[in-house]
Length: 336
Image (tube, rainbow, N blue to C red; front, side):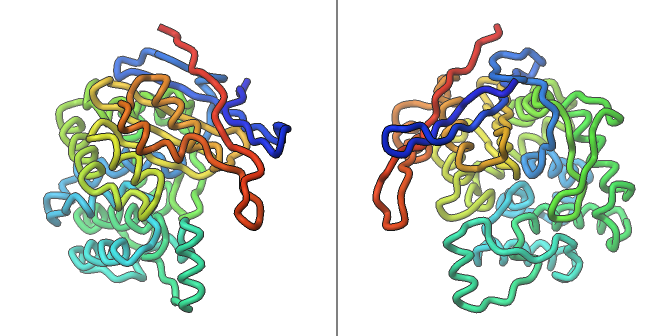
């Protein structure tokens, strides 16, 4: 049963609550802490991207095309479609000898609402590079080019590159391939349904490298390093994922997934965290993530100060006046 994690007040009343399920797992598979149902099955959504990107390195595509940290990081990210994001995706495509039309992710506005307004105001003609998943798609295409796979249907579950990615997800998260539930993401590629426990286990391993074969460990270290060296590619200007990674001194990686999913890998503590907000509302995610990190004693005083704006937020009315608060109200339960 999901438990309350975030409360929203208006005046003296708690007007709304958000419930969540959380799993905290170490790289040996121990469930260290939890809240609600730590084995709740849901889709990993875009939180799977850092694990999916392992295929770019394991296949040899990263070496073949001399991908930079910025390019690896944007493959792991859900970027805002800012100018530097678009240029990075275009650079990847140029290395592959491909065009924007090869991206099958569709064209969408930015995840950043203010930037979306600017794009609309400036009458920008959108193309697939603006889409938050275009980096992931470019990474998948790099494997297709290297291996000589078809480019027209790389987004389908039966395509060789998607089968390879599924095998990697299975290996890293210690779940049988047959047990992974396949759905279709908004950007047209497969998404992976599994228990939160397995998501957290996967993140503990890609952060620490522990429990992985040597080739996987090397690839995981590359992903971790790239995301920390280029956190602006994981989200964008004033983005939560970007600020979280940038302000935690190479200790963690964190990745948002649609419908209220968030996964964190904590390197030196060998821990992974997987969170699912029951109603899918993103406003509850950031306070929940910060409270989890505080409960796990991950953040020092300076890091807490730098990230404090995400823990508790003001509930504002139409003229910007505070009329309540949005704040976390839970504690993780220790299992070992």
